[in-house]
Length: 127
Image (tube, rainbow, N blue to C red; front, side):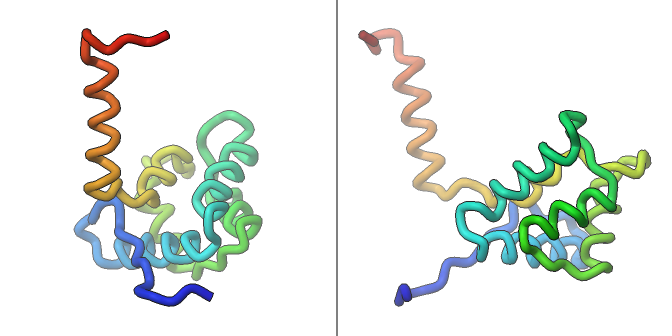
């Protein structure tokens, strides 16, 4: 058991719709509790069940959530699905995962920028 402050999951972006934001936050929290396999497991499950199409329908989304051990209420799942559905009764898997992925922390973003700046430096030598 780990002592200390609990980490909170930060939403990737607010939609302006409190119902959607609450549903996304709940799904993020459920996936976060699953540890490293939470969001990554969802991403892999979506890729597998979409058979390379990159899109899933509502039944497939429910199936993947079940495989991931996540129980999301009917209304919450419907809210998320409706928000990401572009009128074709399917959601884009990458868009769903991106919506659920929390943003980089300030320190992590700084480290990524530093690496890219170093790689773009013309004086940087490899090998």
